[in-house]
Image 1 (spheres, rainbow, N blue to C red):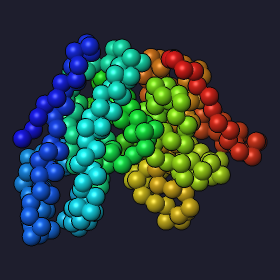
Image 2 (image 1 turned 90 degrees about the vertical axis):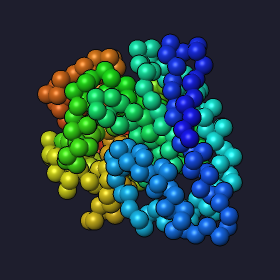
Image 3 (image 1 turned 60 degrees about the vertical axis):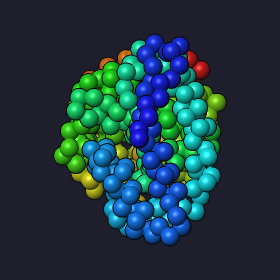
Image 4 (image 1 turned 120 degrees about the vertical axis):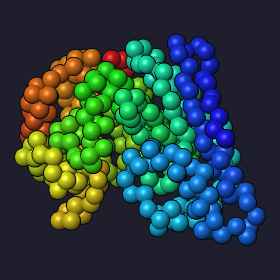
Length: 320
């Protein structure tokens, strides 16, 4: 059964978590004779189908992936299930620290702890004019402390962005419903700003560890000039072909550039704009101004990289 957990009343509004993981662990408590197919059937009937409105927002859900997931999880089930109290406690601390940095953050939303199915660690989903937070509790438990904080803070900021700018929430929900890509600048901006928020809330986390992307940063830096120019050319494109190589799929012609390079590039853009605007102002900039400023930041990135032979680390203040 789902068990709502309310965080301490020291918060203005308690954070409500609906924890579905006990039902998930129960699948693996069956006798050893329980087959893989039976476990998959139980996963579908007890977790996926009752929550299909959420899982349908996750790209890549398929039968082969479920089989791999159940097989892999079974090999480490004791370690994963025993870590869940620590996962919940870490979530508690991260929520509290985020609210301390963003006091206007509305906490009257529901967070679901779900099995990740190897598809996500955290997702803020706009759904029927509400915003829910999905957390893959098993996947989060395998992260380092920095990575855990980074992922959850990133998603909390998406939720805060949706709260502060309803038009962004509406656009995100429309994209999920229609499966159409937003324009590239919008993805670079929303993901980049969420990455910067991690650096604001946890300035002690190195930029290479804001998500679990140390190799990504090291591999992207040498290619920044070309990537920045490419982004400028396709900034207002919503074509999957133009966007995929920055966020979703490997580049066929440039396999050395890692998938997800747009997160790092977006963070560098947000860092640049934060030198000119406060965070509150950044959240309120109109699209025309944002596109112009993002284009200018990309131009500067390219020129600075070419001039210096390498892009140096940026610094941020400890408070907004």
